[in-house]
Image 1 (cartoon, helix red, strand yellow):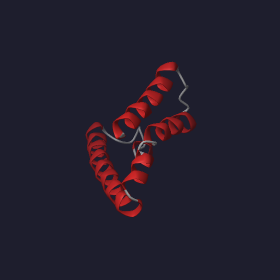
Image 2 (tube, rainbow, N blue to C red; image 1 turned 45 degrees about the horizontal axis):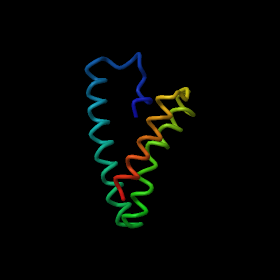
Image 3 (cartoon, rainbow, N blue to C red; image 1 turned 90 degrees about the horizontal axis):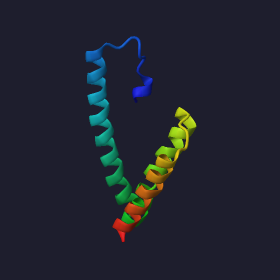
Length: 89
């Protein structure tokens, strides 16, 4: 959502309000979608999809923001996936 805010036109106070609003709304929507997904497809499938969020975020950062794949990014992405997999068993 922050990508939609024009940088030059938003003052510091208005930008802070937008960041707080997007954080609260984003968190609430994420939790709502998680609960709905568990109801619709069941906990095992929802957990498998939830474990892909780090990988999807990394791919989007590379594709959209032009991030370079470095050792720490790759290690963090793979390490995060392993921790989630180990915690779910």
